[in-house]
Image (cartoon, rainbow, N blue to C red; front, top):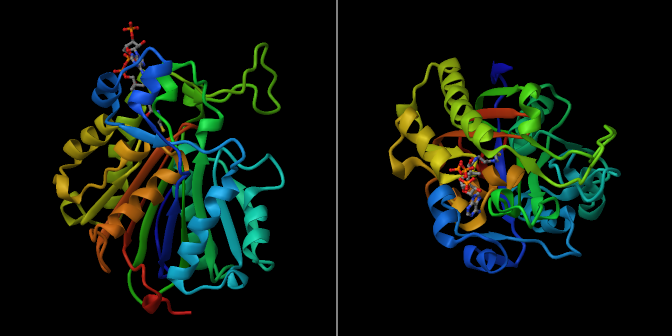
Length: 333
Ligand SMILES: CC(C)(COP(=O)(O)OP(=O)(O)OC[C@H]1O[C@@H](n2cnc3c(N)ncnc32)[C@H](O)[C@@H]1OP(=O)(O)O)[C@@H](O)C(=O)NCCC(=O)NCCS
């Protein structure tokens, strides 16, 4: 799916939160046959956050949501929509969206979860945009986050070193200027078994273990391909090129995947947001966490042309192109 935005809708508030516990590569090398040198060279990851046993997604999400709402100047009770992009909800049902709606105090909000792997935040942004542009919503809270540590096989060195826990949240509102320009989203279920959680749903498996399994080489090939093709498609749709982009926010899975896309697309390093070294791959939390870092470092300014591209389980991918607003002054309603 690809489409240009009509109505002016933008991000007016942004927040993120990660669990306190830091697990370094050296920590992992104490319990696994791995090393800081291997993990750093192959992935760029140095450390990741890991949630405590008693922490669920909604617990880590709450501070992110409150920061995003405060920045947007929106009271929780004013929300009419909450979408949570995740593959690690508190439980299968009720949705973490509904749980957050209750905890925040948003009784008038429609609330649900969305599953699109690490691309979830991009899908949720597009859905939220559509709800506002179609007139169904005025103030939407879009949450992207995962606690993948809960699904990892901590004995499998080829997967457990890659992922970390974290959540980001944004508020979407109509604005007078700037906002989303276009979205491109896609899925290839044929590649689904390259990154999956067998035995986690209604499909019977002889030996379900409900732990994340991945064919790393196939996912690497897929990721390098779609990061480039999706970015090119959404730019082309808007009659823009990579030269026009001020800030590039790729999914933070592996620095080698990011470097490949950056080289192919031709972005100078100073326009590229990278924090995979500190958080690992936080799945649906990755892009909002990277946005928050870019905002904190002053890279994101009102009017900046921002390109975000995610990819992940499904297999799925998705891009959004927008002019940054991130200011309550810009909100028109
Ligand atoms: C997982 C990934 C880092 C592996 O890197 P790679 O260069 O492809 O490495 P390979 O899979 O070829 O493995 C090379 C060797 O390292 C070993 N190895 C794997 N993980 C290791 C680890 N943590 N520490 C040390 N050795 C490791 C393998 O067992 C293999 O050993 P062998 O040659 O004796 O069989 C890489 O494929 C990748 O990043 N894929 C994409 C994953 C991803 O981003 N998924 C999420 C998408 S949202």
